Structure formats: structure tokens, C-alpha cells
Image (tube, rainbow, N blue to C red; front, side):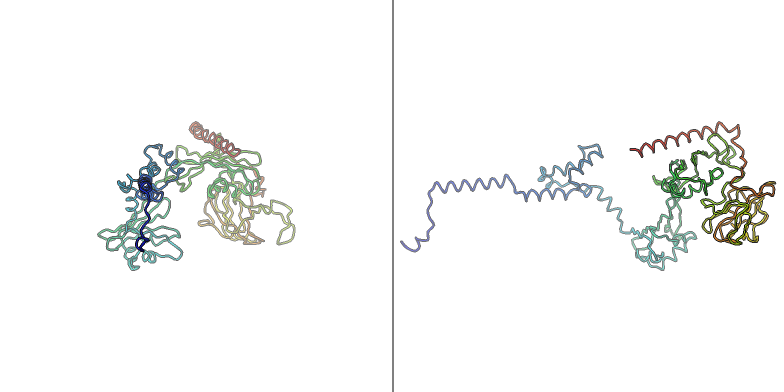
Amino acid sequence: MTKESSKAPPLYPKTHLLAASGIAALLSLALLVFPSSDVEAKKTTLSLELESPAEQLTQDQDAAEAVQATNEPAASPFAQIENSAEDAPQTAEAAPEPAPAVAVAEEKKAPNHREVIVSKGDTLSTLFEKVGLPATSVHDVLASDKQAKQFSQLKHGQKLEFELSPDGQLSSLHSKVSDLETITLSKTDKGYMFNRITAKPTVRSAYVHGVINSSLSQSAARAGLSHSLTMDMASVFGYDVDFAQDIRQGDEFDVIYEQKVVNGKAVGNGPILSARFTNRGKTYTAVRYTNKQGNSSYYTADGNSMRKAFIRTPVDFARISSKFSMGRKHPILNKIRAHKGVDYAAPRGTPIKAAGDGKVLLAGRRGGYGNTVILQHGNSYRTLYGHMQGFAKGIKTGGSVKQGQVIGYIGTTGLSTGPHLHYEFQVNGVHVDPLGQKVAMADPISKAERARFLAQSQPLMARMDQEKATQLASAKR
């Protein structure tokens, strides 16, 4: 045998060769009919990438939620994604056009629109520089309109929106200064024009219920009542409830008040419409009523006036540090001396209110009383307010005051060991205990307006009952 013949490939029977050819043909056919998982995965991914960004939720849970939200399962765009594995070849050949939402998003990101948030230390000049405007242009903007200077009164967290022209100049400046107010500067042929837009809120009524387990202010805040409305509530019931010494744990209140709303957001409060306060087991009611002459006041649910001749406490939320006594030992003089008034301890600067309408007999210094105001109420009554830090604006001897008007502020002037108000009450020149003094009632609802008043008060009282019952039932669940 030669070397060449020894290297020749072995000869197989013809039947073997036919069998091998058949197997190869079957393998080729299988590859054509059943693509690999890698190829199929790539097609599915391609199908997803061709969908709009808003349609890239592929999880079954997200798809089900989308169908429920629209109530149109047949038209849901997520159904196309879920079936993309079956229709991958067709999807790849005929890709859908980009969804309109993408185009809208791109339009919002206008190249000439800039937004900046005011940070600590920012000025209008630094904000102009942040958006690519020269700081020198600030002067031109502010000088163009007298009201434009309001843009320089920046607040931390305030957003300013700039619109620039194609050549990089300021076209308009916009800022929201409050929930109700926005200001704008727009460029015109003559400079910049200032414009203020004030949103008109809708007014609705709101309800809160609270139980006092600490102080009134803390319990009211926990219930959702603002500080100003809490003060208003104390003022309404101030003729009957001494908020300095009468408040007890377990006292409760219900309040219906006006609420101002813009775009579904509460932006402010109006007056209290009706309220109920339970103090030491006794319940007081109040309803705001505006008579035909346009005068508003508060009355009990049955039409009696909440307003008396005198309020019981001239200082809100103060603590009684010393009561009326004819045999008290003076803390500074260290000897027995009659204490012909009540001392209300409160932080320095706390407002002091006139107990009733009257004439100012004195607004000045008076010996150990320090800064003092004395008011004359009609012919029989007189009140004194001592140790004031200072007098309220407009309070002077010979002037007049209205009930509840602020006349001064808690201080320590005169013979005083700490900030407090010394309050005296005289009847026909004789000192009496202001805490025990019975006060006269003001006029009730007139007969001519009683039907109109009850038509307003009865629904308000009924609503407080219903709201309270609903709230308590929800709390028990």
C-alpha cells in the first residue's frame, strides 16, 4: 500500500451516508421552525422599545390596574405589550408611531424656559446670573415699573420662572408669591409691564371636633384648628368661660368655620359660623348671625346674645397667680395688704384686652401699678390694668375703647416680681372680685329677625351633631 493510499478517508456504506444527510436536514428544519430563546428575547425587547415611555409597564399587576382605571380593557395600550411575544415579527416590521405624550413632554421643556428656586443668600441679581442673564439687567427690569420691585422681595423656597427670547434676552418673569397671588413681568415695546393675578377662592364650611387633654391651644391644634381660629373661639366663649382657670381635662369643642379653597387646596380661613364648648359638664353654644343691617355678632342657639357687658378674662390663656383677697401678704412689701384684684401671669408682651366698652380715664404711670390703664364703663363700672410693659397704639387718656380691643401688653413695671397683669373691678367705687362678678346680658335676637336666625342656626347645630357622631363612629372602628 502506498503512503497516499494510507491517508485516504475511510469509505462508509451508502446507507450510513443517507442517514447522516437526513439528520442534517431535520436539524436545519428545526432551527427554521423553532428560533432560539435569545432571538425571541431580542424581538420582544425591540417591541417594548418602540412603545412610548408611558406604555412601558409590563408587569401583570400594573396592566390590571390600568385596565380597571380606564374601564376599557379592550383598548388598553398595555394589552399590546403583553401580547408582543406572539406578534413580535409583525411589531418589528410595522413599528407604531411615537405616542403624542412624548411630543407634549418635549414641548414643555422649551429651550428658552428657565426655573430657579430661591435659596439662602440669593438676590434677584444672583438668580438672573443663574439663568444666563447679566446682573446689570436687573436694574432695567426693576426700573421699568414701580411695582416690579416686588420681585426683589424674595422668600426662601420661592420659584421664579424665566422666559428668554431666542437672542437670550428676558421676555417674561413669573412668580407665585402666595396661594392666591402671582406676579408677572412681560416685555413690551416700552419696557416691562407688571401684572398681578389674584385667584378668587371658593368658600366652603369645615368642621373640627376636639377633646382637651392638655392645654386648649395644643388640643385645638391636634384637632386641626388653626391658632387664629382657636383665639376666635376663646373670644366667642370668653363671656362664659374663663380660659385661665375654668378649663379641665375632658372638656370638648365642636367648630364649623368658613374655609377658603383654591384648586382643592385650603388657603385661608374665614369666621367661625357656629361652635359648641363643653366646660366642666356644661355646654355653651354660639352661632354667628348677620342682621339685615349687615352687623354680625354671636348668639346662643336659641337667640340670646353671647356678648355681655364685660368679658370674664382680659388676657387669653393666662394663669391666675393671685386671687382677690383682703388679707394677702404682699410679695415685695412683705406685709399684709389687701389684694383688691386678680393677677394673671403670662409671658411678657401678651396682649391685654379691654373688658368692656369705655372711656380711658388714665393711660400712664401710677405708683406701684407701673404702666396703668383705667377704663370707665358707663356710670357704675370701672376697671384697672396694671404693670403693663407698654400701651397699645392709640390708647391715651381721654380716648375710648371697644370691648375686646387690645389696650396694652403684659409687663413687670411698678412693684412686680414677674410679668403679669393686675386687674381690678369696681362697682360704684367699691372693689369687687372680678371672678365672682355677675355680668349683664346684651340684647337678644329681635322678634323681627328670629325666624331668619333660626333658619340658619338650626341646620348648623344639626350638622355639628351629625359630624360629631360620624367622627366618633369612625374612631371606634
